[in-house]
Amino acid sequence: MIESNVRHLRRVTPPLAGYLRVGHRDGSLMAKLLEKGLPVGAGVILDPTAGDRTVDLRTSAVQNGVEAILDTRAVELSTIGGFASSTVARLPWAGTAVHVPGDLGGLTPAEMTGSIAAEAVESRVTGVLAPTHFLDIDRNWLYVDVELTERLRADLDRSGAGGTVIYYPLVASLKVLRDPVYFAKVKSELRGLISRRQVDGIFVRVQGFGTNKAGPLNLRKYLALCRDLHDLGVPVVGERTGTVGVALAAFGAIGGVESSVTFGETYDARRLLKPPKGGGFVPPPRVYLDGALVTVDKEDARALMAKRGLSRLGCRGACCQQGRQSMIEDPRRHFVVTRAGELSRLSIVPDADRAEHYVSTVLAPARDNAAQLARSMPALASHRDRLDDWYLSLKRILAEDAAVAHSTALAPTGRRLARGA
Image 1 (cartoon, rainbow, N blue to C red):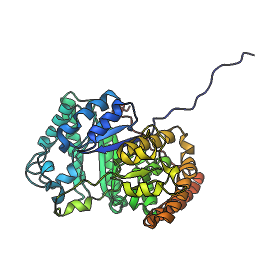
Image 2: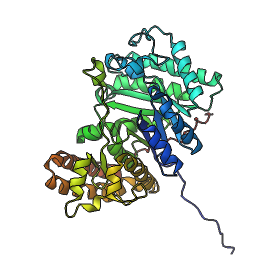
Image 3: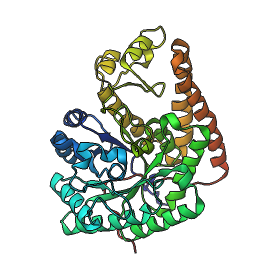
Image 4: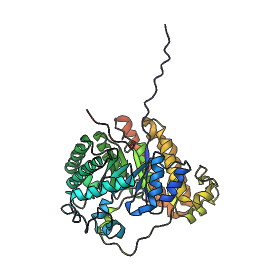
C-alpha cells in the first residue's frame, strides 16, 4: 500500500479588515506609520475636505497595499448642519443648497456622480463610498441612492477606473432597518446593485449605535441586522463601531470594523439635522487602554497607570518603544497599531472559534480590568457596567449559536466582485 503525502489544509479566509476615517490632522501620522512598516489596517477613508493634507497618505496607502477610500460626504450635504460647513459646501458635487430627494442642490444626478468620479480618478483612490443618505430623513432616499450608485459605477468605468471598488453605506436607525417591509425593499434594491456588479460591499452606519451606545438589546438587534445582510454575498463592514465592532467581527456579524483615530466609535446623524452652534473644534486624542477596552484622556491615563497594579495596562508593542510614556505622548500612533493588531490576532483564529476566543481571552480579562479601573476612578463605572452587559449578552448569544447554525460575514479585500454566472 502506497502512503499518500497529501495534506488537507484548512481553507484560508481573508483577514478581518480594519478601516480608519482620516481627517485633517491624521493624514501625516498615517503616512509615516506606513513608511515605517507599521500596521494601520486594511484601509483609510479619506475626507475630501482635507485637500492636500492627505496626498502623501494616498500615495503611501496605495504603495503599501492599503485601500484608500473616498468619502463623498453625501449625508452632510443633505442636512442643515452638514451643509453649514464651508468646506463641505465647497465640494465639487455640493451644488448650491441642502440636498433633498428631488433636488440635489441644483445638480442633476449625472452631474453629481460625474464630479465624484472625476475626484476619484484625480486623487487615485482605490475605492469610493457611494453617495447615500440618512434614510430616517426620508425613506425615498433609498431609490435616489440606488440611481446615484448606478451612475457612479458607470462614470468610473467610463473614466478608466473600472477597478475602483464601490462600498454602499447603509445609513439609518435600527428602528427603520428593523421594519420588515421596508428592510425587504432595502435588500431587494441592494441585491439588484450587487447582481449588476455595481456594489462591492456594504458599510452599515447605524444611527445611535456604537461602542458607547451598545446596550444588550441594541447589540443583539445590530448583530441580527448584519446577519440578515449576509445572504447578499458581499462583505459587510460596521461603520463607527470601533471597539464593539471588534466583538461583532468575532461573532461573524461583520467582516470589517471602522472608526476614527481614538474617536468616532458611535454614529449620530441627528446632530446634523439642526444648525451648528458656535465653531467646531477637534478634541485632543485620547489614550486607548486596550487591556480594558476603553479610551481616556491623557491625564487620566497617566494617573491610572501610576497606580499600583495598573502599570500592566501600559503598551509593550512596537508602536510604543518607551512603554506607557510613548503610549500617552503619542496616543494616535498607539491606537492605530493596536487596533490593527486586535483584528490581526482575531483573524488567525478559525471562524468557528472566534466568538469563544474573544469572550474568554479578550472580553473577560478586560471586564476584570475595567472593574479595577472603576475602583480607582469612579467616572469609569459606566464603562465597567457596559463591559458587564456585553459579557452577559455575548455569552448568551454564544450559547444560542452553538445550537443553531449561523452565517459569517465576508471580509472585504479591496477588489471588485467577480462576475457571477
